[in-house]
Length: 350
Image 1 (cartoon, rainbow, N blue to C red):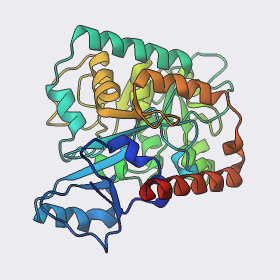
Image 2: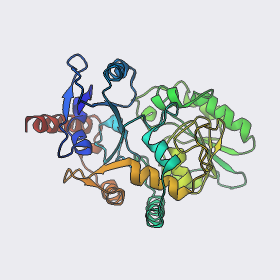
Image 3: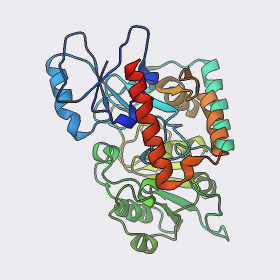
Image 4: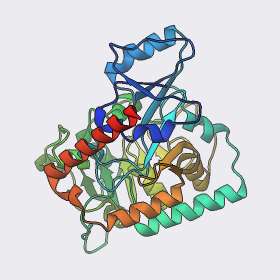
């Protein structure tokens, strides 16, 4: 497996998610890439800089796999270099690109889910909701929403506007300002809460929507509260393509999508743009089983071995209670970078 253009800090943990008894993992730069018939190429996501690599692989009939963060990822942000407990590996597309079928879409469209697997999905979903677990598990616990409770509460989820899921998964509503305005048109009498993306809040990514304008377009802007508290206050969620829509479905909330995220089109969401390939009606437990039990991969960071979604959930809960060096801002970020680079170098040497 030729892993092309993977940042050094990711090379320490990545092999555990794909390694097998007959699979050799090699990290190469694009300039040093030499493809042979028996190779396979792994790329991170769908970044523009990798499109020439994918084209070369297609021309030589070398399979291309794509990797991305999983849905129960970490306590802390990927942009803060937090090591993930979950990743996804897709052999034909990637879950946030609706333009081509992904392994996840095919699983949801064609998979058969037995009673035991659905019961497991139901139990996992209940545990996630009760524990208030989300993808990144950041933010402070604080009250959210109107005090009087007289109007329905709509949570509008801000996203990183140059994210690949926006580029690939939206048709007309592509900016956070447009999303807020569209939500107000659809729900003119609701109490609108806007939550900007945590990467934007931390200053790692930019946003065309100033908070001053967001406050004029909605009733409440929530910057630092946890996602769990925001979801607990909401009656419904409006989003372009955010994973928060999936987390809202797990909590039994009404979800309206303005793009085509992986969880739309299965009869569980209200979709501004229904997806023509997705014609099967799924239950919520089928969606959870396909996404969290079959598609995502989990690795225990202590043992380096593959594990289950349930074990990963318990580790996230333990990690959330810790107060380690990782919370020390820039210092913790640099420590995490150095740790993962050293780990990757040792792995390559061994």
